[in-house]
Amino acid sequence: MEKHIALLHTKILNMIWERRLNVSTRGVTGYNPNEPEHIHYGTIAYSTIHAILLSLSLNSSDVFVDLGCGKGRALCCAARYKIKKSIGVEYSEKLSREAEINAEKLRGRCSPVTIKHMLAQDFDYSQGTIFYMFHPFGPNVLHQVLKKMKEGFKVHHRSIRIVYVNPVHEAFLTDCDWLEEYDRWKPNTKGNNEHSVSFWRSKYP
Image 1 (tube, rainbow, N blue to C red):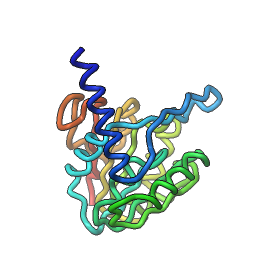
Image 2 (spheres, helix red, strand yellow; image 1 turned 90 degrees about the vertical axis):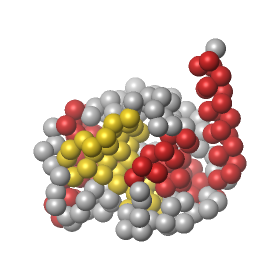
Image 3 (cartoon, rainbow, N blue to C red; image 1 turned 180 degrees about the vertical axis):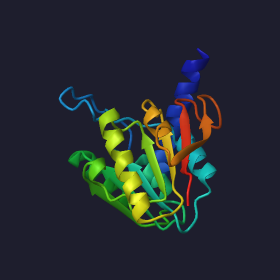
Image 4 (tube, rainbow, N blue to C red; image 1 turned 120 degrees about the horizontal axis):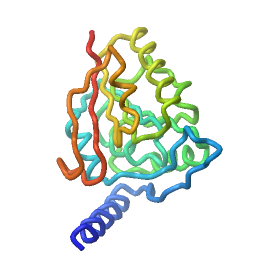
């Protein structure tokens, strides 16, 4: 009963935030067995996203990159901070367009937003200081993404951080000798009532 009440409370808060921000990011898309590396679209609570962004202490030099941005919920929240820019990467044309519409309508936007309709493994990883992922793809794509991310890191040395929500395949991050985990949230902690969240950062420069 208590769990049901908590879920209802979270749902109501999410609806309030949707109206406050003037966006529409709710909903779930079905899993496509023909694309096993691409996970279905879903969202996490605004309270969790706000807690994550607050913990990152974003500043004017940060470039926030949402890998598998979907309709842009996390992206839009990040864009309300005074950062350099926010970038959403999404392979679905339909979701990419919805993310663009939400970014255009967003109330309180403080930074420019760009949506890239492309595969995450084709993105230019020489840009970006914070990479956010809500379990967006399977192990093969994640392996390719981390490889490209390391290559981009070599091209443009800077401090980067990775936020991995529902870190199903985080063993791949553990295997990266250039990354280290610096924090971890369990469900029902720090405003997060849904999934584990792991935080990673580059070891150098």
